Structure formats: C-alpha cells, structure tokens
Image 1 (cartoon, rainbow over the protein chains, first blue to last red):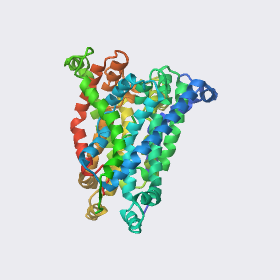
Image 2: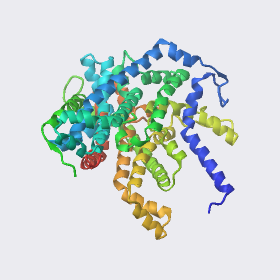
Image 3: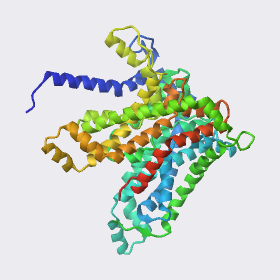
Image 4: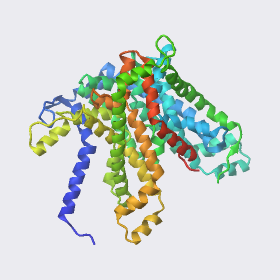
Length: 269
Length: 276
C-alpha cells in the first residue's frame, strides 16, 4: 500500500543531507586541508591544491619517524597484550576462581574510573626508572590499558565455544593442553584477530599516555599531530589524521559482527 | 549450566595479567591518592585540596555540568536512533551513526577545530545557505565542546541501547502492537523500561568517558573555564605540581564514584558483561 509522496521524498532527502553534514562534514575539512596549498576564507574549497604535504609526510624524517614509531609501539603492544590476556581469558572463561569478585572488579575498574591520573603517575614513576621518553614506557602503558578490553573480548570468544567439544576430546584421552591447542585455540582465532585489531587501532590513536610518557624525547604520530595542529600546521596535521582514520573506518565496516558494546568501552581516549 | 573447573591452574593463568595490572594500574592509582595528601617537601598536608578548591571550584562545576549536558543529549539522540533502527532497517543510518566509533578522540578534536571554526567548513556551508557574510564559530566555546563530545559519545551509547532493544523478547512488542499501541507508546512503555540496566550502563560509560577526556577539550575547548583534565595537565606540565594534579584526579574519582560502583556491581553480577 505504498503511495509515492513528494513530501515524504523531500523529507527523506533533507534528513539524509542533514545526517551527512553532521556526520561526514567534520571529516571533509581534514581531507581538503591535506591537499590545500592556499585556502583563504570565504572560499568553500582551497584556492590551490597540492600533493606536497602527502609527499612530505612520507619523505620527511620527523613525520615518517613518528608513524614508524606508532606502528612499532602498536605491534609490540598487540603481542604483549595478547600474550597476557590469552591465558587470563581462558582462566576467566573455564575455571572456578578464588576471590573471583575481586578479580573481576580489578579487571573492570579501568573502564569505570578516569584513566588520566593513572597515566600521569605512571609517567612520573617511569621518570625515575628511565622509562620516560622511552618507547618501552609507552608500550608498557599501552599494554596495561589495552589488556582490559582485549581480555574481555577474548573471554567472550572462549565462552562462545561449547565446553562439550573440549570434554569430548578429553574423554578420548587428550591432555588439557592438547585440547586447547587443537580444538579451543583454532576456534577462537577470529575473536583473537578482532581483539588484536582493536588493540592495534587503539594504540595507534592513543594520545594521553604517549604524550606524558613519551615527552620530552619521542613523539608518536598522534602526539606529532597535536603539535602540528596547535602550531596551525593544518596540512601536516590533516595528513596524519587521515592516515590514522582510514584503518579505523575500514575496521568499523568489516567488524560488524564483533561490535558488542561492552568490548569496546575502553576505546577512544 | 556449564560446569567450571576447580583447580589452582585458573589463578596461575590469570597471574601474569594480574601482575601487570597491579604494577601499572593499581600502584599508580594508589600513588595518585597518596601523593595528593603530601606537599613537595614530603609532609602530610591538606593544602593541595585547599588549593584545588581555591583555584578550580569553577572548573569542577563546569566539568560536571558539561558532562551532565553531554550525557543528556547523548541519551536523547541514542534512544531516538536505537528506537528507529529497532523498527526499521535503514542501512544508511546504521553506518552513519557508527562512523565515529573507532576514530581516535584526538583526531575528532582536530576535525572539529576545522569544522566549527569561525572560518571553518561548517560556516562556509551555512553562510552560503543563509546568504550572509559572516557567522560566529563555535569552536573554542562550550557549545563547540558539547557538539564534539556528543559526536564522539553517541555511537557507543547507541550501540549499547540498540543491542538491548534488539535483545528484548519480540513478543512484548508484538502484543502491544496487536492491541493497537502506537510506536511512541511502545518505546516509552516497553522498550525503555525493560532496557533500564543497559541505558544505565550507557549513561555511566558516557559520563566517565566524557569527564576523563583530555584530548577533546584540549583541541576544541574554551580556555576558560576548563575541564579538570586540562587543569591536571597544566599542573603537571607547567607547574610540575603533582600534589594539586593528583588532588584533582582524586576529585574526578569521587565525582564518578557512585556511578562506578553501580557499574562494577552490575558487571560483576553479569560476570564481566558476558552472560554464561
């Protein structure tokens, strides 16, 4: 019984334009700025376009170094975070634990309270033991902060695997370790990949810990972007922004079935 | 009902992660609280708190008000989007509301600076539509900050609430529809009341994430008044004054305390938010 109505169509077009302006609009500016040589008000687009800044970012020492540093930090963080949360998640999913309530509270606390005081005190502690201004200081902070959300993603993955599968294998005489590596682990791989990508993206975009702990010697890509944006170097800031946004957007589209709110409550920052 | 293995092995598996959390989270946390009560010379004092209330009372009130406003607007928008998507499948809206989900907050801050500036991209569009020469920009004011906060926080809250709406037994909604209830009544009398805990979790996490955000106010916020996260950063970076910074940190903990305890109790009862 659908009737064509010009009013309904107009309304829909207006709503779509409004949503696009509000949601995509903020991102259009950075794309334009990244290609702008000259852009003066009131021109809606830059007067002159250039690829110079994209070229600079990949050729120039400082920006490229910061990107390489960010990727290195993120990759090591993923490895450490996975190595810690894989056994812990299996423990939470399969074992009856002593002081379980306290353990759960501890591993949930970082989501429930502001992180900033912890990061600045971590920076001060690291300052005394030589981890400030050091890549490993940032990696340790990122490992701690990402541990919490990778743990809950992987715990959920393990819980989704039926215990009966493991029990059947054990009844046939396989050891617990063998059951884990041949049955549980392969079934958990998609969840582990999702968790790893979460951690990677979070670490790549993290500013607060990287800013306080990296200072004064090293700058990750977000910290350099902040410096550039504050110094009104809009082009360089925008190029770094786009490089950091593209993987996030791709992931958002690809990850649909892992999009459960409680997993990602640690993201942002 | 799954049976769980009783063995000390479980605790051993958790031990490495627990040690990292203890050393890198719990220890700095305790140190933050501890050092908020000591002056530079190492003597016990309440002076840091006195200084906080002397210098930053206005900022504390502003932070709480800003956060409460953000939570309010986010809840209205996210319940509206979740309700719409509960009844209608509109792929466009589904992707659009989730767009900001994984974009780092700092980048959002930079994008908003360009978007909301007096000569920014939004005004370039608006001045043409309205046909005027100039419009004031809202970056660097509380409205710009509110807009940016709402922009980044809404997808996450919507995701939680939509998840709850979709998990509800469809029979409730169908029964009400058969009895002739309007969509609006179904939303207010069935969907929202039955999703209470999820809406509460969305509220709490939005509140905590907003009040603890450093990057967004750093990029778009006004210079005065400031969010308390900015005050903490200035105290450390410009005055090397850890006592006052940590007192502000403790106050931010106290502000979220009631909400955090509700959240922890709820999540522990749900075993980390994952039923099973």
